[in-house]
Amino acid sequence: MKTVAGIDLGTQSMKVVIYDYEKHEIIEKASCPMELISENDGTREQKTEWFDKGLDVCFGKLSAQNKATIEAVGVSGQQHGFVPLSQDGKALYNIKLWNDTSTTEECALITKAAGGDKAVVDALGNLMLPGFTAPKIMWLKRHKPEAFASLKYIMLPHDYLNWKLTGEYVMEYGDASGTALFDSKKREWSKKICDIIDPSLINLLPKLIEPSAPCGKVSAEAAKAYGIPEGIPVSAGGGDNMMGAVGTGTVSDGFLTMSMGTSGTLYGYSDKPIADPEHGLSGFCSSTGGWLPLLCTMNCTVATEFVRGLFQLEVKDLDTEAAKAPCGSDGVLVIPFFNGERTPNLPNGRASITGLTAANTNRANIARASLESAVFAMRGGLDAFRKLGFRPKEIRLIGGGSKSPLWRQIAADIMNLPIRVPALDEAAALGGAVQALWCLKNQNGKCDIAELCAEHIKLDESKSANPIAENVAAYDKAYAEYNKVLAAVSPLYE
Image 1 (tube, rainbow, N blue to C red):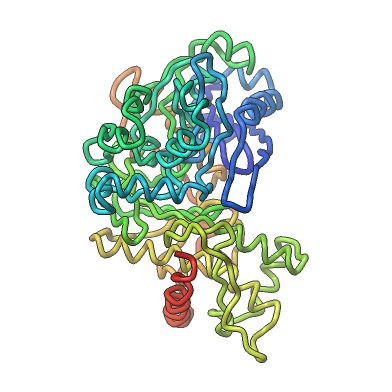
Image 2: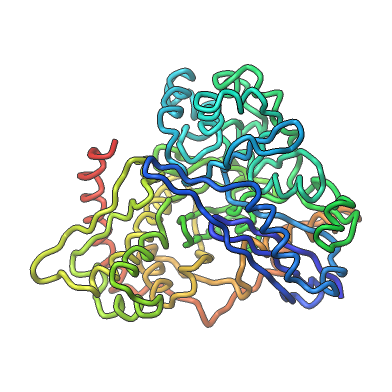
């Protein structure tokens, strides 16, 4: 038996899968929940010791027999989080996460110093947003100066796991492009932006490596701690969206992946750099070569979970209730900014339920509207893709939302594209495993990642959903109303 392992460090949990690459199946997997620090000022943080525990728990649950067969490891991690370490590898502060919105002032300061939004986009291919890493670093400097003075290593969550496995301090282009410190066109650190935060910053950043390259080999210490073979390669890894692209086969032009998890993301592979930061389409690099233009919202299953909790419904019961309502929920709309929002850029945004009348105020309409709202946000990203000349063929759907037949159909109708679901779940962890296999094969000659994904990423046709013309027409009208309401409430939170 020949296997590779994929690790996925998400916001809510860490998962590890062992993938048999000869039989094309996940033979074992394990998970560990992650805690979250949340404050009313937008703070969303975690601790490195929780990441350490996740590795211990996950690998501890896997059988020694299966772990002994692992030939390479690949790591996926939540993007943008800032892991600040000292010279001796100790955390200097908590990890500020992708959904932390407490850094709006730092974003404004960096943007002003750079010469405005256009200058920032010219330097990075992206706007300076609270979700990104750069303002988190400036926040540490302004609010925890003693910690900043001791700063030696700047890592993203997936880099931290790579470092735990190998002891190597490196970063690949895909996750680096989500830091707001990186010129995604030139694929190099932006000295201009780094110097605005601190003149010493650029010298603290890790060495950049190609996504096909190994970040290092499993150290003796890690092998003993986790029960995996010493000396096997650990691939470059990447952000969860970049690894989700690998795990869904979105590694060539025309395919889009939509992830409906805690956050909502829509991204597609491109052979050339494309971006539309004004409309939320970030100009990221992929973790397979090429680029991965991406839209991210902070509230996807967040909205449905709040509504489900409000009505004290089980997950399946929410779907059953929502199915009773028509497309467009009789005019009821949910503005789902429970965590503030990144697209549109409203870090101080608030959620609301609107469009209520004496005739349409019922549980079914509100339940369905919570499902629809997440996809309306994605529709804006799809429009931006099309304006840039991207011609989508279909959407590969992953995340918790992909498990709901009703949500899959809503997505197909709102996006007016076929929805396809990968046969194997855990797309980000599987993507890490497939990237590890790519890295392994590259040691013996050049391997094409698109061909590798075509071999290993299969679709579950029983979960396909195709747009229904009548529903598409209804949702075009509902989407127009959603945008009217969004335009009206946005100034309240700017």
